[in-house]
Image (cartoon, rainbow, N blue to C red; front, top):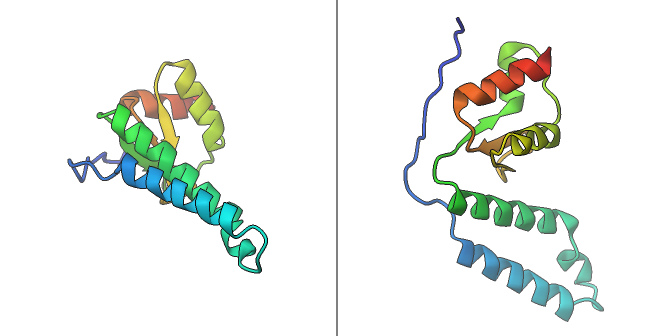
Length: 130
């Protein structure tokens, strides 16, 4: 028995617009191409911007393709339970091997979205922690 209670989803509507995110990618690509020789180039050649755009793109695709999903912040879970879990990419690989999907979120580098049932996800974490 645990004190951990699972809630959600908090929202039921679509929070991602893949068309808008694609337009951001297009605009960013054009800016990089047009300003590559000016002093402004460093503004448009920022890997952080590219990382965020990639997160937005992956997350939007995931949300569009998988309607039954939830997000969990593994850092918060680690702090609450007082244990450390493997890196997110390791957890994602295991989920994929079990035929579930997952994506990192843009809101936190320690958060993960998955369509794995909650009980399966927590059982997986318990097994990975042993």
